[in-house]
Amino acid sequence: MKRVATKIKRKLNRIAIEKRYLQMIEKAYNFRQTDAGLSDFFEYEANKLRSKIHALELE
Image (cartoon, helix red, strand yellow):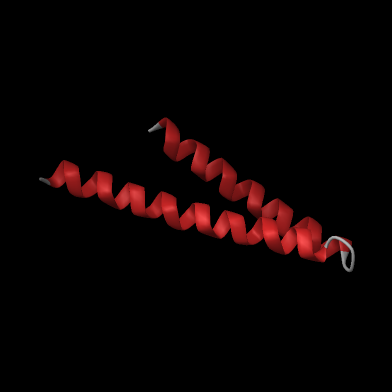
């Protein structure tokens, strides 16, 4: 039972990270024309989240 709960927690965590990743990508895109620095920041944060997602996929 404990193993199933851990898998469910990982899945929910991954879904939350993916949602946040998509938000960061959208923000980066929206700021691309008006504020390049802010766009770069959101893109950098999105890339960090993508790395976390990839790490979770390998587990």
